Length: 111
Image (tube, rainbow, N blue to C red):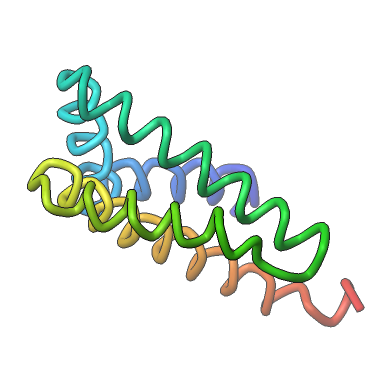
């Protein structure tokens, strides 16, 4: 079997997975609520800044980190946002697991 065929089949299976479908639906629902979408975009920007600063400096900016935690706590009080975060987490776990499986299969030539 051709590796490209297998990769395309895997892509199709991912798109058909419960994790993907739920994440896509949660994202579409979120996009319909403009007020919540704006809050989520603000949170995502802040989360990105916190992660980037952590990677660059090796430490958290406590002020930004606390602000991010506060915004997250406010967001998860909304059922749509909570469903989105849960779906996002499950989808990210699926993708991380697939990447881990592939990484382990080629580890001997990547070292």
